[in-house]
Image 1 (cartoon, rainbow, N blue to C red):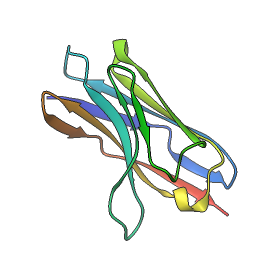
Image 2 (image 1 turned 180 degrees about the vertical axis):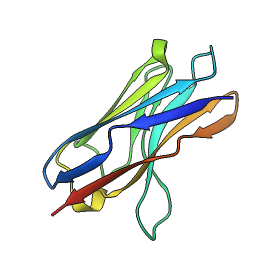
Image 3 (image 1 turned 90 degrees about the vertical axis):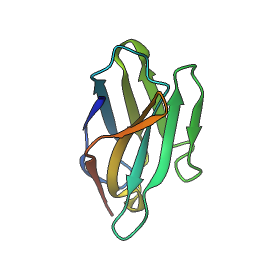
Image 4 (image 1 turned 45 degrees about the horizontal axis):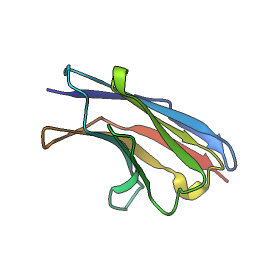
Amino acid sequence: QVQLVESGGGLVQAGGSLRLSCAASGTRFSINVMGWYRQAPGKQRELVATFTSSGTTNYADSVKGRFTISRDNAKNTVYLQMNSLKPDDTAVYYCNALLFNMFYWGKGTLVTVSS
């Protein structure tokens, strides 16, 4: 059973930056895909960015050029550097992991961007 623990959320003004971290435990295998999703109030959960174990990244159009996902495969940890934050980025951010065709989710960390 994989456990995911996120950290790094908080309150920031528009234009500011935050860095999220997600550490996976409970497996000795390298996780196939790690990534971030977010869910704003009243909206569906959406993809933010993903990072495969082979180094391929994928971003939502809304965050391209502002967010950067990175990963430490040895530690099964994924990061999300968020720059030039906008009020529309306000959401609960969830870490996600795919291992042996099973999806795992963290409990989420709240990011609030004030205007």
